[in-house]
Amino acid sequence: MTIILTDPELIQYLESQAKAQNSTIEHIIKQALIKPEAPVDEASAPSHQQLDASDHADDMLKRAMHKIYNMARRYWQSVGDVDRANMTDEELAEKFGRFDENGIPRFKDELPDEPPIGSGAYIVKMIEGTGGVPVETHLEGSEMDDILHAEFGDYLYQRMMGNNDD
Image (cartoon, rainbow, N blue to C red):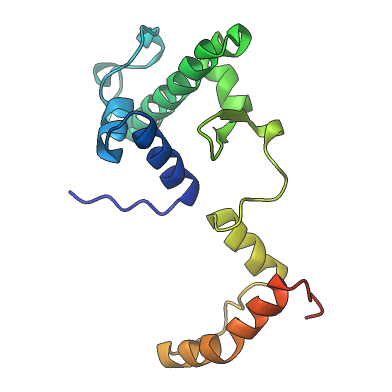
């Protein structure tokens, strides 16, 4: 099976973790999803036997988030932040934002208001800032190529230079 990662923040985080552990990204993902690295209360993660088939997706999400929260807890334990390390999954679900570009777990209120350049959120914000893409518009592939080649490069250059008069 091939998995394609498109979130630049996740890719950067996985690459930094793999480099720090002298390992591969595949190993980091396997480590995070398959086997716990530290003794953590796994009782809060529900088992498949307790859930019926309709709850399978929710169960998978809870398990994945539980693993992510455990990674954050291990970081906080390593730096001596006992209060954060002792937070429950429910508490973290309300407050946890993401891992930053240095692999440090951050709460939502610690994250910058502006999404990181190159992230999916940044692209959405840029599209919204230009008025969005009209839904009723239908362009052929060749027409889109013509527009991108003719206009987007100049537009992007002007934005980068700080000329936002458009």
